[in-house]
Image (tube, rainbow, N blue to C red):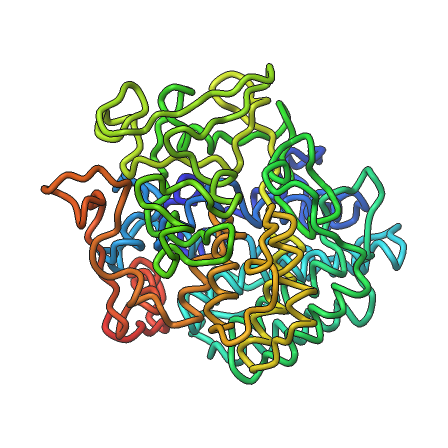
Length: 534
């Protein structure tokens, strides 16, 4: 996000967004439309809600989110969020500031529309309510991103002045959560949003997506809210009409976008609206820089085809000499390793060799090669234009996540039964390609909470959800302390048991579960208190 807004406060964001909202409109004789004139046009509602959608999320933010976790690493220290992952960030961190500014700019856009929506003429009640529901959802999405990282944050649901923005204090997280849940319930219960759209409105927020976001917020709250999660997820599962797309790898390609598994995604379109995120993860042999790379810790999460973790698997199931054999098929669909390949548009396969020192993709061969020896395969778009420009949609919420939230909430309550397993985890593994009974059948006597968490990590890897998971599970100090690792080289120096040391990370449980309030914001607003130990 820091490429969009580097160091702007809430006040600056509000000022900038006021002018953005009036840009490119038909000019009045006074050179610029007044606020009253602007909101007197029915098309203004569509213009502003589309601006709200554009600010909700983007390709870089989703993929780089995993660099803050034990799933991935970014080797460029002066961009994105490397400091969050390794624990070196401060109150002056540019990425922390950018998240704060970007989200409040988005909130301001939503408040502008919601404050003026009833003034706009010639809108049907149904359309007015749809815009209201979309804006409430997007605003809740922004606030969820803020409080899940910063805890208590300034909370307002109307347009505030620049002066007000410089005096507003932090609202208790519990109050924010309750307000967001109430607002989303209003959207859902009053049918502000339709269950689906016609072809001209593909990608817009539906009633089911609103339920999904409400379930995510409740799940983040943990104990005491799990029953509310399952009420929502069960309703989506029984009434929503969603299904798992048949092929896991194809799910993340342009040819199979907007299928029955997708609840919400960031809509891109070749030529008209594109991203270049794959330049940051592809190997040099495909013109990439591989700035973002999967870690060995993620590779090790994938189970064997007969359902064992690699740490517990017998020698007949897992052989470290051939570590990618007999593994969860989602590993090969998500991560590139030596011998795996990218499918090209002409039908051929581009095989990668990432062994140490091998040109051009091998670990330690050049500064362009992966810092871990692994490359990302998920979200590879072989229909790209020049300079790896892509119109591939980036998924924000899909049916697999609904199944996993349902299974997790049940497991946390000790209520995950064989019947519910067969509704949730089993279909995910069948779709992935598992056939062995031990991997498909309900694991009697196993640690169901750990099994569901492992499944969630494998299924949703590199989709921007792992950071919230390790925070709400309170395991960050376990997985983000000490060396993160790359591929096995067998070297005695610079490795742990032969696995390349990539980055020595630190997570202080007394400090890092909440990000610091940016010092720049506190300099402008003395009412903003700081988080503990910052």
